[in-house]
Length: 94
Image (cartoon, rainbow, N blue to C red; front, top):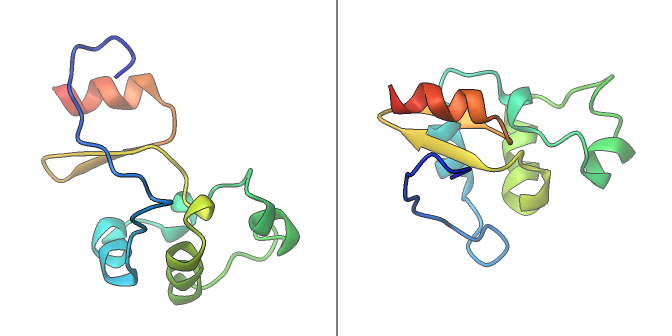
């Protein structure tokens, strides 16, 4: 993990996508919009930046289109870091 000396368990979302239930649990009380990948074609086509989907619609779309999920998602002890954010990863190690 970016030279932080941590071994991660990985999951290939293309082969083993997250279910709607798993996404709901992962998102928890967080803002669902932060889980959407703004670089994804579907995100841009649907103009989600200007008109974000409801939580239930976003979860349904992310389950059906795993590339719509911002990655990587790193979870440790109930805390989460999204995207390539080394500072956030370091925060998870504390």
